[in-house]
Image (cartoon, rainbow, N blue to C red; front, side, top):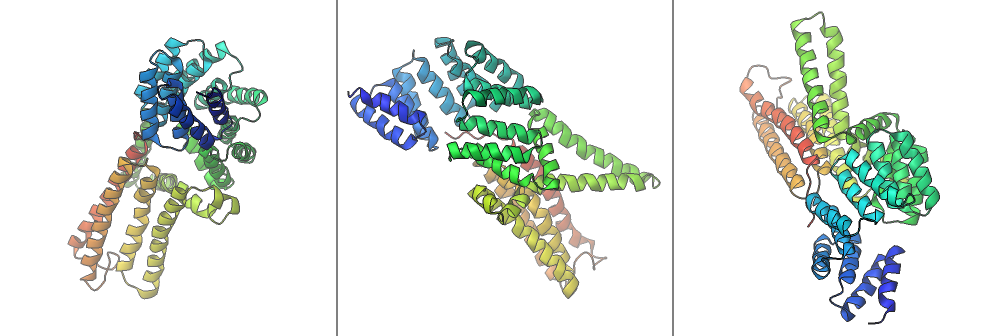
Length: 430
């Protein structure tokens, strides 16, 4: 084997030239097909182009060929983490630690897996174990800062980021990490500088690209406060998130009941209920609606992913349909248009949830739910068209005609709850 090939392959990978690194690694494997390190490096290259299945096959072969080599288990942990197979990833990372406990990168990987599982304190402890070995280890510092942000210890996180950037000012991930930390501090302009620098260093870093999108939207006063809420919720565990969601809904129902049973209180309770309802709808629709606004921004248009553009287009389309139907009602005085406006407007909520769900079975579940809602809406519109196009705003006696509309409204509520569940689902990529 030409001894220069392994060194060249690893150097190219470290330089971020992943296509060339993959090419060299394949040459390496042609000469040494049983080299565990070569299979592991090829797995990392495949991971960069999101070929999850082949990456998993290569790293499985690497572990088979080198079961006592810490590096193969370390790479296996990375591949399994990227594939959202957290339990298996932790097993691989733990084996890497056992085989070489003095490598800070192994502890940083354990910390990253804890972060993915929303175990902030465990992530912090693992990162600090890595830093006890090497206080200047960039990856451990980055994961430590992310854990500190999630724990609400922003000042410490900021200090860690500044120190990490001083150690390696050309690390794209560190700049992106600093950007997100600044977004948590409601400093979108400063965050933007770091996100742009991260993309200058590594144009493929999607996390920095997503940060640019959020920074641009955060320039809007309304979205800035919504983003603060989103980031706050992201710091919480799943149970706490559901506690806030359910608590807010129950609180609004109690206030609504209190206002109805005590007319004197309604003056105070009704505005609160309306404000909560508007806020809830905004939290569901904020991402696609503000992404739609970014499509007319030169930088935002380039930063949006294809999926974000698609989501914005679909949600914008149903809301435009609702608006046109409402205008049509006032122009043509056809009650059925009120129904169309109502149903199209409500459909925007589960439609936004569809694109907020991970790709795979969660999006399929949401798509089927939306198809069911569209079917109910079509049946209701057809039923109303058989009564001279009169809608519920003009027809008061035939209450049977409300049944499908009531079913549709309940379906929207159910689909919204389902959307929250699907958004938190984890999909294995391989």
